Amino acid sequence: MMEKKEHILPSNESPYLESHGDFRMRELDHGDLEQFNALLQYAFQVTSYELLQTGWRQDEIKSAKRPILEEAYVLGWFYKERLASMIVVYSMKVNIHDNIMDMGGITGVATYPEYTGRGLIHALVRRAIDYMHEKGFPITFLYPYSIPFYRKMGWEIVSDKLSFTVKDVQLPKARPVDGMVERVSLDSEDYHNVHSYFALQRHGAMIRDPLAWEEYWRWENDDMIAAVYYSKDHKPLGYVVYYIANEIFHIKEMVYLNIEANNGLWNYISAHFSMITQVQGDNYSGEPMAYLFEDSEITETISPYIMARIVDVAAFLNGYPFQIQPEDLKIHFRVTDPLAAWNEGDFLLSWHDGETNCERVEDNQSINVVELDINTLTTMLMGYKRPTYLYNHEKIHTEYYMLTWLERLIPVEKPYFSDYF
Image: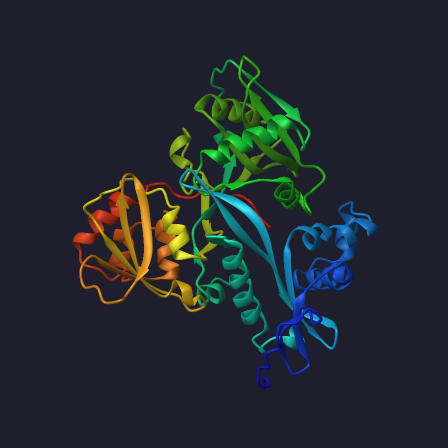
């Protein structure tokens, strides 16, 4: 039975934010690095032996997550000075329909089993949301260890991972291209530039800064290879990141800026025909690939990947690039949010001179009202599920005529998100 919550008064001398009996919540610092790493490895079942076997040195294991404590907000519960539970918030950026927004990346959510059932993670998540609101993050992303758990706190699925298997005899025939593929180092400027250009024009993609790139490669196989497609003018137009093991060509990520690069990369993959029996990979576009193959009987499986949550409804809507700006229309989004009081209520959305205006108003409107929770608002505006689909499944409550407006207002593009942190 959890003891009655005590509130510790703000003080320049006390680092604690909350207390529950012998449990104290505070931000982690460098002095907590050893406990931080120990909890991560325990919770995510990564042993030092396994890391050593894949080429990590003992000193590298200890310092691998040091950048988190330097560049992220790390909050934890301590039981008698021993770290019991924690959460990490990265400061990141993501493309929302060609508008680059600040994003809080949630990771490192972990608790030792003897401390579960005390509401520690729930309290940490609530504090993390408060922190992101204070810092001006309109939205937050995370990779869920439990979808139902995060749904209860306002997150919703916004992207899928499509895993595919292509037999060697199903590989596409070579198509003529003017350029060629070159293998490059994993820190190649051309490789990074292709991703940067792609992310700036692809909804849902994360804008990778040095820390994001570091997270992208953390714990990866040393055998990973990057190959870039160059045009005849030696302009980088695409890349494939992969490794080969047991006669299988494993694709971690494949990105192309035009169809020429797509054809050139598949020519390169098919050139490994004598070395492999199949190609396996992941596709994050939200669209199946089978149609594009001459032999379309490839194997594809779909699984939910990233969840997102709008942190600040007013800020997100004010920065959202709606497809049209109808000055004769006003919409009332009546939102419910279990953890953020500032997101509860009626948000009036209107447009003037090409500008979007969203403000919280008295919750007493009866026309043009769209009732939904923060989960549904997030997945709808991210483009993962369309308004009509959500209405038909009773996730949205509104008059039917409002669906026409919502379908016209919200861009038709599914998110692309391939990162992991």
